[in-house]
Structure formats: C-alpha cells, structure tokens
Length: 339
Image 1 (cartoon, rainbow, N blue to C red):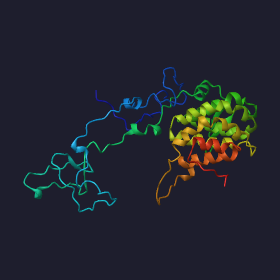
Image 2 (image 1 turned 180 degrees about the horizontal axis):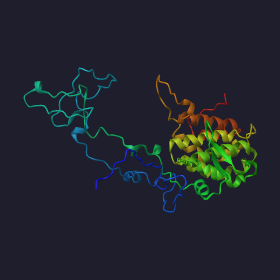
Image 3 (image 1 turned 90 degrees about the horizontal axis):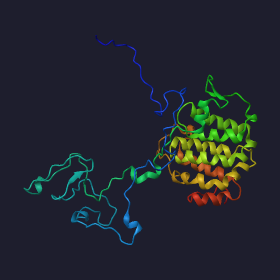
Image 4 (image 1 turned 90 degrees about the vertical axis):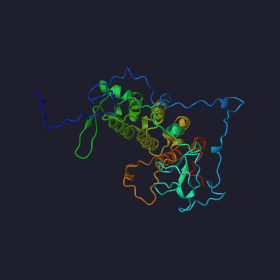
C-alpha cells in the first residue's frame, strides 16, 4: 500500500531543553546531575607539570622554528608590499593564508616558482602559527544552565499565585493575591532563582514577577537581600549573555527601588565579592560597529555598557564604601562621583 501524502506539513517544535516538550508538562529534574554555572563540563587543558616544580620542560628547537631571511619585517613595522614574494623553501610547507594548496616548485630554477592561487601573500604553516581554540578563552564560555530552578518547580506544582494575562499589546502577570500580602522572604528568592530561565513561560513570569514585587513592596526588600545573593550569583555564573543582561537590568532596578533611601544599595555592598567577578570578565564586551548603527540599542543588549551602568548605579546608591569595594573587584572602573 502506498503511503498517503498530506499537503499539510507538521513541524515538530524543538524546546530549549529536552526535558520539556510543552509548558504544561512537568519537568523531570531527577536525572539532572549537572550543577548550574559549574566548571565541570568545560574542556580540560593539559596540566603543565613545570608550573609546580623547579624544572621547566623544554623541547628541542628545530631549524624550521627560527626566523628565516626575508620572512620577518627587519625590525620595522613596515609590512611587505603586495609585489613582494617571500623566498621559497622547498623543505617547508608553504601555503597561502587562505589555506589553498600550492604547487611545489620545480627543480629547474627560479623561473618555475609557485604562485598562490589567491594572489595574496604566503605564510609558513609551521608550529609557530598556533590557532587559538575555544579552550584558550574558557572564561567567556557558557556554563551549564539546567532547567532545575526553584521557580520552575514551584510553578509546575501550582504553588505560585501568578498567571499570564494576555493583553492586546503585551502580556503581563495577573496576581491571584495582592503583592503587599505576600511573604517576601519566601517568594522573592524563588522569583530571583528563575532569572536564569531561558524557556517560556518561566523566563517571562520570573522576570516580570521580580519587577512587580520590587515596585510594590520596596520596603520589604532590604531584609531579604542575603537570600537573593545565591540566585544572582548562580545566574551570573552561567556566563549566558542573555541571562547576564537580564540580571544586570534587575540589579539596576533593585538598587533604585527604595526611592533614594539607598538602603538596598548599601545592603548589597558586603556581597560584591559574589556579584562583581563575572562583571569584571565581561566589562570589555562592547559592540564595536565602527560607523555603523545599532538599531537594537533600545533593547539594551550591549553587555559592556550594561555592566558600566550597573557599576555606576552601585556606586551612586551604595554609600561611601561602595567605590573602594567596586575598585577592588573591577580595577578598570573609575568613579562617577569622585572628581
């Protein structure tokens, strides 16, 4: 029997995580063993034995590892002209910079020299030219972010008094209980733990819930600050740029939520040791577009600019001890108040 072909093509929706196929399914987090933001899943580098001993491991230098005549710049910064052709070394693998193959020169004489097919300058493909891989920049690599947040567990269990209210322009949260009557010691750390979620509806509910609770119950946040540090640190340690940008915007709103009393900002100063190291890693991650235009700058996705705005907010609302503590963990930061 021939297989019936339908005109309607059904495409399977691929979720962000394999553990959930729908937002209405309960996540099976029992088999999740990876630690969020952990370093165990990163590629391991070879251990340098000489770093822990008085003997340094060396290797024998072969002639092909030395600079040959005509290959360097002669102690100047003047680059080679386009007409210059590097000398031929039949005993080495000479290939163009683009990686195309070059025909080996014949033994007849200099007239049968090989010319690169791309027309560009040639380089020596020796071990002196080392390609940097991802293992050399592990500080910027994303860490595991498993879907095992407390917010997801409580929401799937029906313990959170929130639901999505679908509006005409944008969605918002419909609270089943007045926010003023909530126990902030219980609910606010749960919502902060959901900031590292990247899957809907958990990401939207946790982010909007944090903003709503900070707006309405700003006077109840200061006693809860110690319970918010671990969720903030875990979200930043994932090194996911979208998560980091979300947390930075929340931190800016957090230090400003008490209406110029600066109590929240001062309460965060003892916990800079947990928050600022990741910010120091990504502080130079700016979008260098030259004379181009960033049409998405209204979304505030530039990580370097967000980090500088966050540090300035920390200093402005953190009291007299804020700057010296920020300077200790982010040495390149300069004060916006002093001088």
